[in-house]
Image 1: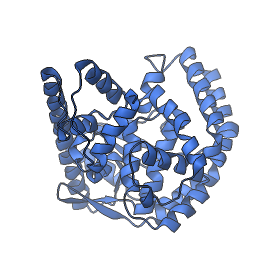
Image 2: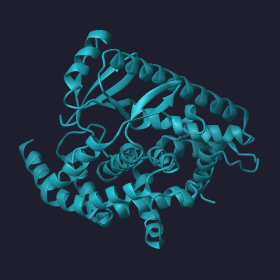
Image 3: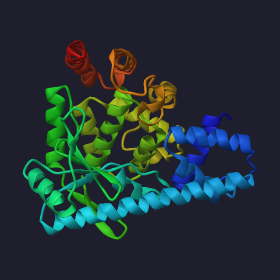
Image 4: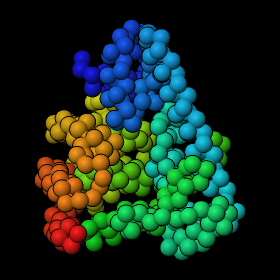
Length: 358
């Protein structure tokens, strides 16, 4: 069994509470596995699995495992407290909003506190955005910062937690796909998910699943993703859906083959029950597992470890980044043909023009 296979086994045990046989782990193997898990932002799941399966560790490794899990739980407690405070603030002022991505998906994990949290992403439509911005600024005295592209969100920090307030959840280069996406968000009937006893507003089940996949896939193609985002996708797949609605959305976006390739990873590598999948997988999907995972393990979380340059600027950085994106677009064209055509014929010429102006 390879180091990667063993990590998958431990993650699967944590995701679905499937115990493994107790064993002893040498310190060298422990450190190697923790390093790999850190690059993929899943150390919390690994530590949870090591503890729940009573894996025999060296004394300092056991202490490190406990300390890691304790720290991750502490960050989760802080993030949940801030999420609940945000919900209270906006509800008091009757401002409509939706929370997306990991801040609420974490609640679906068997041990929510073992998921390494990121920031709090929430969406306010054009009718509520300025009102929400003013309310938060007035109540919390925060400073806003625009995203790098200036096209999707503003960000702020409150009590050490980063919030991203979206006025657009995803930007497509294809006008047709943007229209499909905007309609999906507009038509989605909001639901709620319980976080620490508070009902937090989220997208409808089908819209949340497809949006979470689109966000994962966007980062996979452009920067890279870690296993944490794939684990989020896996726990979402384990929920109940109107499968017909999911399939229709995938067809509209022309992303079915990409969606099923990541489904196959969740089944074959993360131990998800194939029977729960909203879209059936086949041999072609299983054949795509290794090429996708090669990119995942090369780059780690958000492609951090595939970047040659510490600063995201300069002609060398842009050439390297551009080359990697072209490679990804070409290699994974079949996973999202319409999206890829738009990237080739709209996005790439635009980026070349921007690079020449720098």
